[in-house]
Length: 166
Length: 134
Image (cartoon, rainbow over all chains, first blue to last red; front, side, top):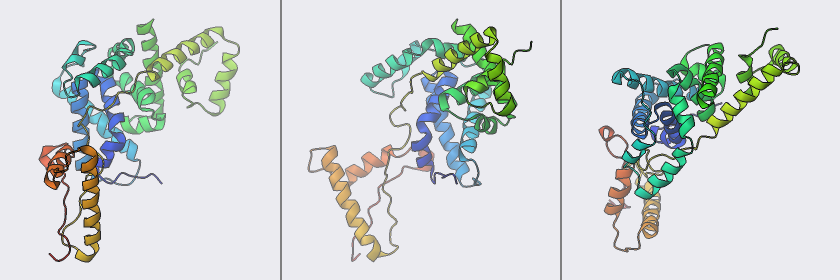
């Protein structure tokens, strides 16, 4: 049986980095990713009390995805492509670690930009598959769509990425 | 000839099974166009998977081990735990800072504050229960 984290702090420690990477790859923006992780953890904290045993990861990623979509709706704007300039605004880390992080982020600039050009549904499916590492079934649960739709979105997303990166 | 293009990503992800899998494998053996497309998809997939894993910004999630010990439940039982907590905190203080004057209150403010993500819920705190006899 799947082990379910008992507290939001444990969820944060176990899944925080994955959620942050998901958020960053969807938004392309460290500040937005930071805010999204906070929002997800607040929702997790509220939701854990009424959590029904089942697929915890499906539940968690549904929360994460919904938080992202709510943010998109709230801002009523498409996520912009800030790299690499906005990395300089990342003042939460020390200057040294920011430099290290900048170098790491820069390695994937072209791919990140190509991801941001994808329609949200395709971007989300590709990121959940290739960045987070979820199975098609888990992605289907998180996005509340049939597995066939997941398969189609991932495939079409990759074909678009291929064109962007060519 | 129909080209099972949409099956290819599922194939790369290990999500293709049964007849669909064997049909695609058979087709790839005789279709240069689909073999080339599979190679393209494989490169794209590898590129996304090669994106660096980003570390969490400092302070975004709570640090491990905020020690919270319930007060006044069973003094006898908690006396031992309290002693262990105090010893552990002293040991942590010795590791964190060479200053022997570091107090429990200083530790409390330092680690308690970092353990809080959302101020609305109040900071997690290290609570040291009273020792035996209180």
